[in-house]
Length: 98
View (cartoon, rainbow, N blue to C red):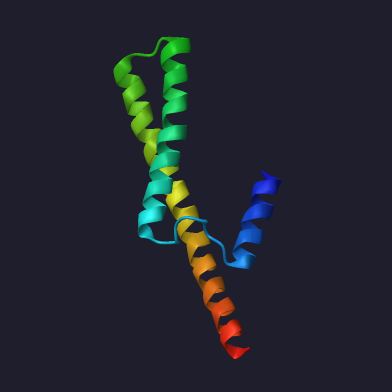
């Protein structure tokens, strides 16, 4: 986790968001949906297969976890994307001065 924080700080300092996408609402939604699906489905599946939870309970848990992880990831992407955009603008201004 410390390595992830260090890498994120390094990318923001260099003004890099992603090598293929730019920070924006579309990428925030895609990354947030992927995180919501990945993390949101794992815990209900464990409950369903290991503890024999009913499909309806597992579905409700999935919906709750998905919304929770989606909101957290979207907020994080928005904060980091805004910081990256500001850093890119500062780097562009410094290049223009030179």
